Image (cartoon, rainbow, N blue to C red):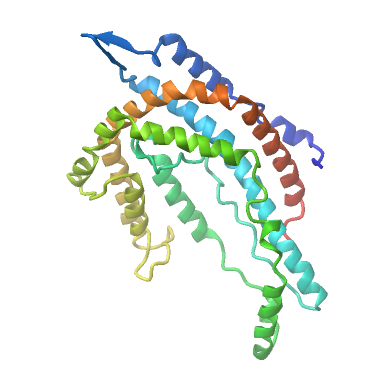
Length: 322
């Protein structure tokens, strides 16, 4: 049963495609950017301008977030998962006469405006990929700011009794099907799969693939021996790891150097992948209208499912701290 909708939630909900999405998509179709022209007896597709590519990219991100959740909706899913996991443990351990203090809930998307597009098809992510690389740095900084968790219920016990306590906590963990992947729209799974199939078609497009062929040499010439965006992300992440492999924090002496490396990576990627991105957005512009039309009913259902999840999350947040 759906939870009641507080007015504060209703005001901030999505009701379907954003007005920006409708405007930019309408402009795309009206300008004929998704159409082809004929020259010298062959059919070719003009590559869109940088401005048009940015509008198409914004539409693609709108769609991705609509299916998989924006930062607010993913936060809602995370807090529901946290409560569904930690609350039964606390009740169970307390019933045995022990105290249990769950680690505080951490908002992984705090401070972010958008989620990042999936980077398995590098060409669809904006040149520079600051949405991907920047989020990596933001998440590492946020994780470093989380204080070390201390559980007085364990610390108050004699050393010899702590193993029994830990075993009790483990035995109190709820079944995985009560919290794992439970708080995401059921309809989104199939639509997300079709989204990724569309994106794969973009990556397989001849112009996109040809434009990406020069990426490795271009990046290597700028000091980054990588072949795609996933490898670049891994390279940047490695710079934010200490000698022991643990993530660095902003107070680390290595942090400024790692940030500088990330900024250089952004600049290099912005230069080396701009052509491939414009080619990719040209292909996205051709595929997106049909995707929206074919999946319109499922997308509307996903909107409703995310609304219900946000409703439940408001009730879960009211319980914090557990």
